[in-house]
Image 1: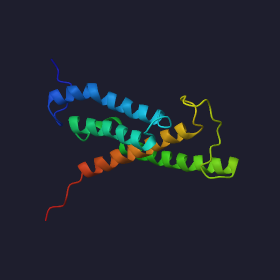
Image 2: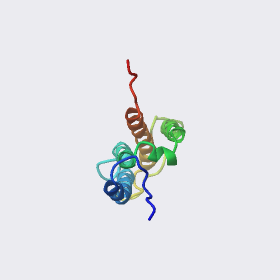
Image 3: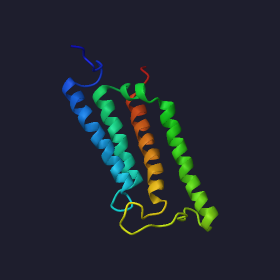
Image 4: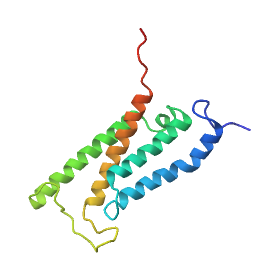
Amino acid sequence: MQNNFPNEGMSVIVKTITRFTVWLIFLYGLYIVIHGHLSPGGGFAGGVIVALSYVHLTLAYGKNFVLERVDKFAMNSLEAIAAILIVLTGIVGLYITGYFFANFMGVGKLYTLLSAGYIPMLNIFICVKVGMGLYLVFYYLASFKPKEG
């Protein structure tokens, strides 16, 4: 029987449990983001939870496991693109309504998923910005090696 787990990281038990739990953490973060305008939460809280799913993978499988699948340049690029989209959302609101970050999309029926205009879109951009940024901070801190001497 072939061992599908790399040698770095934690034990096989932790890796097996991680395979079952990491996607639940990720989906919960997305749920918080998508329903952020209806309940407490939003882009920042959901982004932190999404980043924690990547941290969970890194702790269980080792620091190179996530970066073998998604490189640092892609994460940095996603974070930068999300920041640009957040600012562009504000500029579009300024152009259409005359106010920075004004709601330029219509509002729907109250207490439904599509009731908040552009806020869910902004929550998604904030989630990507916070999630990628927080994971990269964790990765850089985890891979830091001080100079001896």
